[in-house]
Length: 154
Image (cartoon, rainbow, N blue to C red; front, side, top):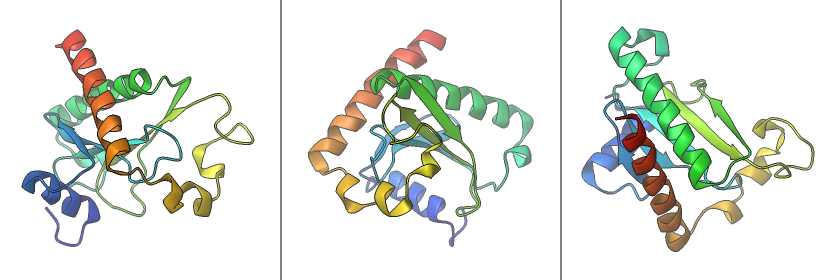
């Protein structure tokens, strides 16, 4: 873990039981609901190990991480009735391998396109932060769908 890494700090919160966004631990990563919910069901999959690039993971860990990310994506699509899933692994802002999973719906933006076409001041507005009850419901829906998906593949 890196002390100055935001993702590592959030993982420490998961490990201490203080991260309210935490849904589930898989073998290579942690599933969490995104802070902002402009795109209902926005989810992240955080690599357990602090590594800055996918290609820097040990081959067997990388393959398992990618498999598990596909399970999280499938569960997210099921839980939130997505018409399409947008998946991104960026890392320019937080240099710790993590996936952004956006359940998309046909008319969720004024013009069809990537999530980043939504103005940041809109997408990240406090109005889209879930309250405790909404967050619990999101976590429950995703957790239930993860149970179904993991059972299907394991």
